[in-house]
Amino acid sequence: MTSTSLKGKVMDVTGGATGIGAAIAKSAALAGANVIVDYVVNPQQAAQFAHNLNEWDRRNGSVEAFDADVSKVADVQALVAEAVRRYGRLDVFVNNAGIETRHSLLETTESDYDKVMSINLKGAFFGAQAAARQFIAQGTPGVIINISSVHEDWPMPGNAVYCLSKGGMRMLTRNVAVELGKKGIRVVGVAPGAVNTPINTDTVADPDKVAKLNEAIPLGAIATPEQIGDVVAFLASDAASYLTATTVVVDGGLMQASLGL
Ligand SMILES: NC(=O)c1ccc[n+]([C@@H]2O[C@H](COP(=O)([O-])OP(=O)(O)OC[C@H]3O[C@@H](n4cnc5c(N)ncnc54)[C@H](O)[C@@H]3O)[C@@H](O)[C@H]2O)c1
View 1 (tube, rainbow, N blue to C red):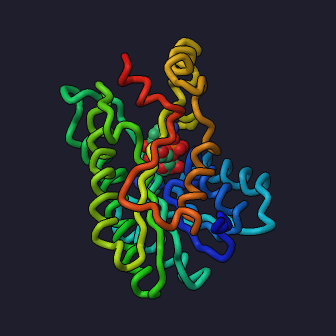
View 2: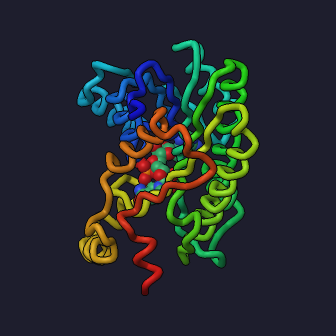
């Protein structure tokens, strides 16, 4: 079997100071990667990130932080440049940063729309572009992983722009994978279901909502961030070398179960 090791690989993870992004950084570092996580200046996030670093076993890889706002193209390009400055190369770029406003179509303002789309979709688009340009300049294969959501396919009434951004990410994955395949670049989507992270603070704080969700999930529980991070580390490795232009759904069976309702 081809190794799932990421030894010697260099990975950027956007929004990697919290939740799923932090778990991706952790799994990848444990698999041997040198990881740069991007975070938006926020003292609480930075403190949590420093705490995580102390807890993680970094014998094999390493994790460093770099501040970049993915809604700004120059910042995304700087994140790629930072990997090259620090480690001389980039092998994996994970578009993970994302937000939601939980407003319906009727309630959504222009500013809500622009904010969600510029972080979730514009950020991912130009992240993919900056990473692909670097892979091509290096003359090496590379992997772009887009953290979308089951809501790339599954409507969520009351969260219209979020679903729109994730639907766009679904097509970004497919289109860019087809454009870049012959250059040895893989592009893969990962669609988590419900995960216990800061984006879900309100849901996780409500025992009734948690019980309802756990009941609806065939595997019986909301995911931990690590259950997503481990899948992403595998997809980044050479063991997934024939996987591209598709989305791996990591939802404990939730979306399929919903089809039977
Ligand atoms: N938690 C879930 O249930 C779930 C389910 C499906 C998909 N997702 C997706 O997973 C990804 C990570 O979310 P999470 O659940 O870990 O929540 P989270 O809130 O912990 O993570 C989002 C991260 O994005 C960062 N971010 C926000 N704006 C940014 C900007 N302008 N530039 C750079 N970074 C920015 C935040 O600082 C944060 O670290 C998101 O794209 C989200 O849509 C989450």
